[in-house]
Length: 167
Image 1 (cartoon, rainbow, N blue to C red):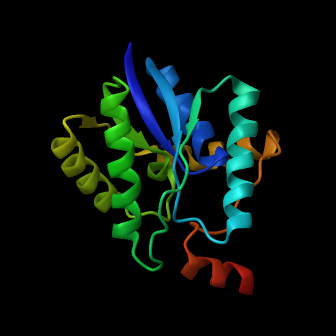
Image 2 (cartoon, rainbow, N blue to C red):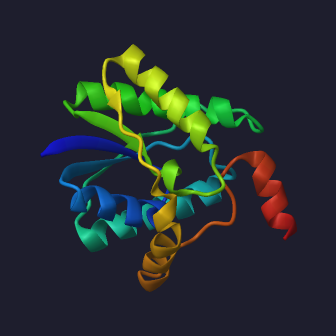
C-alpha cells in the first residue's frame, strides 16, 4: 500500500479525495497547511471543519502552524508555498507521494497545480500524485452537507474574501 501525504485545504474538499484515495489502495495522511486563508476567523472555521471531518472518519491529520502569510492575488505563489512545504514534509515523513485536495475544485487551476506539483516533487525528491478529482466535487459537497461541515464560499485569499463578503 502506497503512502500519500495529502495537503488538505478544508474538510469538504478532503471528504471525497480521501475516499477515492483509500478506495484505490492508498494510506492517506492529511497535512493542513494554509497560510493563504484570510481573515483569521475563516482560517479557524476551516481548521475546525477539518478536525470535525478527521474525527468523524478516523482520518489522520497533521496541522502545521502558519509560518508566513502569502500575498493575495497570486494563485501561483499560493500553490507554491503550500506544495513546497507539503513535499518537504512528505519526504521527511517517509511518504511515497504527495498530493493536494485543491485538485477536487473546479475553481482551481489544474494544469498549473499539476505542473508545479511535478516540478516541486522533482526538486524535493518525491513524486507528486496527480488525479483529476473534480468528477467527485458534487459528491464531496454532499458528503460535507451530510456531516454538517462548514463549507466556504471562496478559496481563502484576501482578494477573494472581499468578493465573498460582498455576496
